[in-house]
Image 1: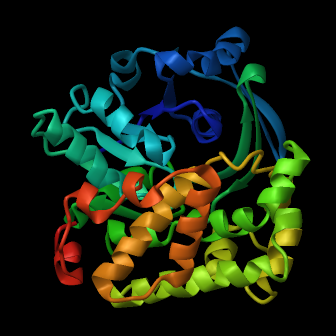
Image 2: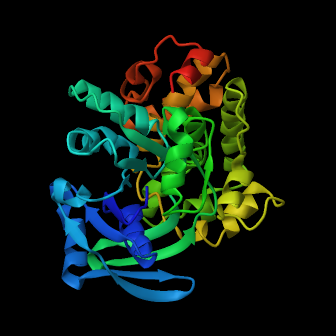
Length: 364
């Protein structure tokens, strides 16, 4: 398949950045947002495109189609790319599954949370039996911030390495060949359990953010997790969660990257040799990111509900204790008056309740 047109669904940081960046690479681009969030597109419509600012300077790129009409957005696209939060997968699946063809490749570009399975499960729930060509990455292809009202992007990093897997995993090599036409950073993961366990956000965001909850409340939005919240002591909690994630990965026979390796190889850190606190505190990319702005941000809600809850369940399935992961889930729930174990993503909701590790691997 020769890729000439890409439909990008979701006009947040990742989607707006991708629209400008892939247009700069010569692809025809359609940028879609749900009608209820159509305001994110107004600035782009008004300016006629997107101003992309990166380390090399700035350039303005027109976007071929800017729309809240999903059918218009995906028409003629070889790749339909979702750059949406994990909690929005089912919403987009419900709209996209009836329209997308079996020839079009669906790429979930963002923090991995078993999105492929959830997309297909939603389609089956709607009675749609298509054989989807669908794949996901472990993280977003950019370190970036977008300003929709200004139609402007501040791009600090084009990620150098991301894990990529299709569902089912037998399709991974075929879809990698297609998606590598738009991004050259993809490497094959073993399967989508692998990409899920290589999503670094549940490891880095909820624990240190939880320990900084009072500071976040007091700051009223003027808080910088990577500059001030990653300290000698909060790193210890991050590392404890990392050890549990790595142990789960070992039970699945994955060679997972640790917190330093994953971010250095993606391009966020300058080396793999320095200590984790120093690398976070001095990262040219991370230190430009403000937030979380409140304890109700995605650093708490999404990364606990779609991340840590599932990791905890994988720990139970593989016989790996997860006391630190569970502590963050419980304390985060107390902080937000939320039962994350009830509301979060788990094996039962994915259709894998009671599966052994071997059966979990064989099922994807």
